[in-house]
Length: 331
Image 1 (tube, rainbow, N blue to C red):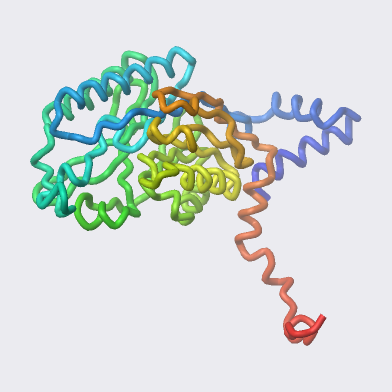
Image 2: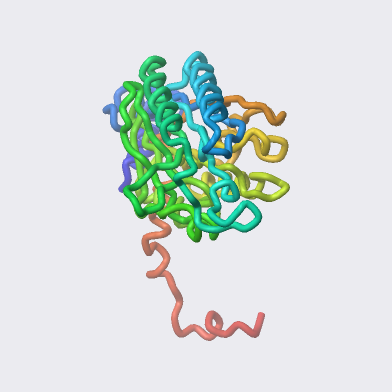
């Protein structure tokens, strides 16, 4: 029996024994429970930002880094322990700007066109500011590999001590990205902040449910999804709907970080395990952060039940050899 089911049984047993309400019994059981059975919580901020798409432009790169750090400060002042940014938060390079045969034709990316010196300076400033603020930061960036390999499209995870804890590399890339720009990643990535477990997804990966069911199996409490949007007139609308669906079907939180320009149809926000938006940035195309307390509920049976249902629960109950079951052409 799962931990959550045991916890709920304990609450019901106490309520029956003492005559207390379920709420009163829940309060007493939680107070006497070991730490690993207790609800946990962390305050998360999600950001929507403006786009810098020219990696050759040193002035634009510095301005983008400064804008990111201003939002980090806003999140810290609002009590966030972790702030989540979108894909390419400092710069998401434009495929036509980098195209070795462009800009009219999209061809293999010429990564030597990037101002890597300024880009790295902004990465280091961001890491230092996380330490100064005492806040975790997750943000999208290009991660260079050794020549002649293409870079990864990545999410960096920096701790509240300014340490680069880990990195997630986008695995399921768009046709343009895999054809001309990036090398794909190969593994999921998780990390913890104050006992809350996070997974990472990037780019167009909301289109792939297997990314999100994998994180459910890895027992994360929240998936951080970062994107620039789907490139269509409705911006990130399809991605936002998919984020809600993944949260509801896997019974965990999903943070949705996209560009501010998409906010009229799909602002950045945080989806609860029931698939409903708990917090969203303003739908006015301006940079902003939205906050929510990511919590766990040991008494919630949703995830344990779905795991049981997916693990062969129904096979013993299948009916074989009954013509009323096998035949499908009669009422």
